[in-house]
Length: 76
Image (tube, rainbow, N blue to C red; front, side, top):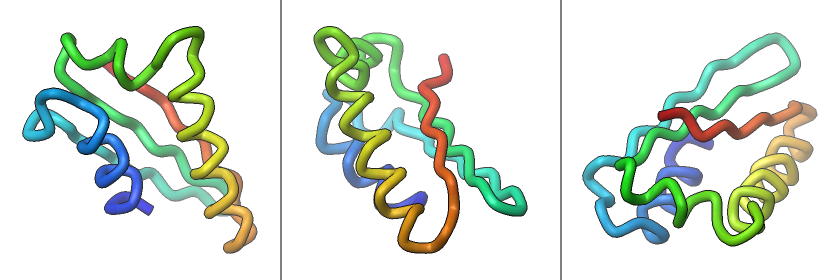
């Protein structure tokens, strides 16, 4: 999950070296925290939140295959 999300984010931003993805596993859920350069936050969120919503949908779909709930957060 971590590598997959990192791959997606790195292809969206201008500063891919500043991307940091942390994954915290619980019993039935997973939290994915994304840290990017302050200049790239707008690219990750997207206009009206569309990009981050799409990323969350993809992550939740992948997590559903493994019976896990996935929450994606952008942290700055």
